[in-house]
Length: 137
Image 1 (cartoon, one colour):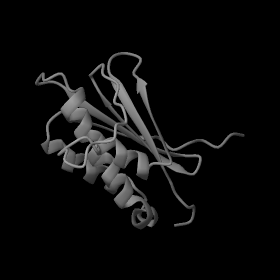
Image 2 (cartoon, rainbow, N blue to C red; image 1 turned 60 degrees about the vertical axis):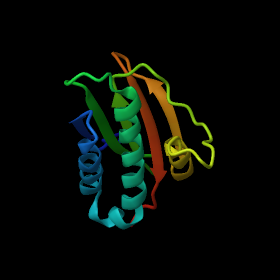
Image 3 (cartoon, rainbow, N blue to C red; image 1 turned 135 degrees about the horizontal axis):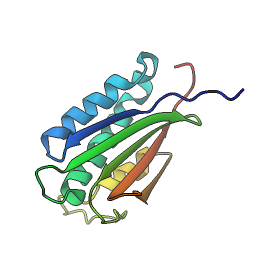
């Protein structure tokens, strides 16, 4: 009989800067206690970067815009998908040393074991990133 996977954690937040802190907290609180020391910082930072990018670049500016997060464990990783209603495709670029922005995906690239941008079936874009964890703590 196959192993039944865990149900992913799923949240929707308004596409507003105040949601960044709330999403980071939601992700941290959903981690098993034993994995918080190992994954809490990296997943929190990934959440902040991806949600900030979704709000800045993926939201359409409408009051009802939402940023959606899904988090699930699979294959020795915790996966985080952040989705927004926009049609743009985030790209990894190297910012100049004098730039005040443009480093979010560079940070994602350095923290995540793997990450990708995928179009959503209905509307929008998802950025999916995985952080490796060690079983047993």
